[in-house]
Image 1 (cartoon, helix red, strand yellow):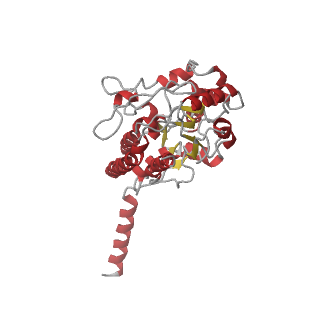
Image 2: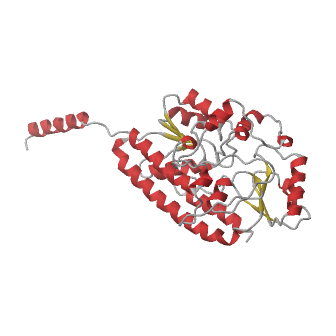
Image 3: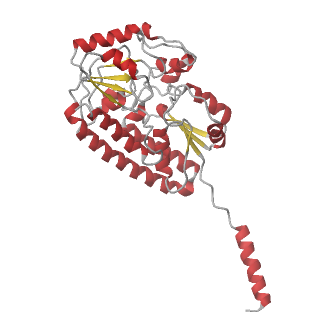
Length: 356
């Protein structure tokens, strides 16, 4: 080839490169808490990585954003969060920092199985029933006859109108974070819905559908990742059901009422909770009620949480003979990422199994 021909060929290649459309950039995604971040990371695996907003180990109910977390929200094309009943502060923050982003409130989605907030120091036992897979029936998850959950906006309405749940009046602790935390206590719907693996599976599909809408070029990858993620959750669920089967008659107390979805899914309800929320210490009256219940019933195990004062547990169970163990409701010691969620579910089960 002559130098003239080579020159024209080079120019043609250069023009072709300049004229070719640039590959579409994957959507930038921000997720509120580690379990939701993990589900988003599983759907996006091989394409991009989402950003985590609430750092592991921190309470999501009242939280001060770091500059890097605020920047992640501001840059996001999609925000995936549980919803206002868990993080009432985040809705306002999204409106300020990520007003142009798409956002998905998972607790409001019709596919989410929701449970109402439990009240009082002790909980009534329920006959959850099981389907062929050993899972609780939808009726126990607040579904109507069409299989749908409660009104998608019910939690927001309860917060907006200040409709307080009928909980012990002795438990109204007031501190600097009370306004944030009170939204959690007032919400009619228990926000800890990620603890039901059926919700985790549903949310994989919700996230995949939204990403496919924003990024059609990678739609098939998102859907395939969601399908694989659901299989991984099914495997974890089967293992957990086997682990917990011998424990279904166990009477136990939790530190705060964060595990209702997990308890209902695996048919092992708690007898009560020491504290109504993770933001305030229980009142002396509530501690006394718990001590009376422990004396009246065969409470064999009490679960503390690593973030909170173990002295409270000692005050309640000193001299009772009940065994104590620790559950981390946020999976602080588990590395974040696409594998976090099934590992997290297994870690909750392993903590329960300590009292076997």
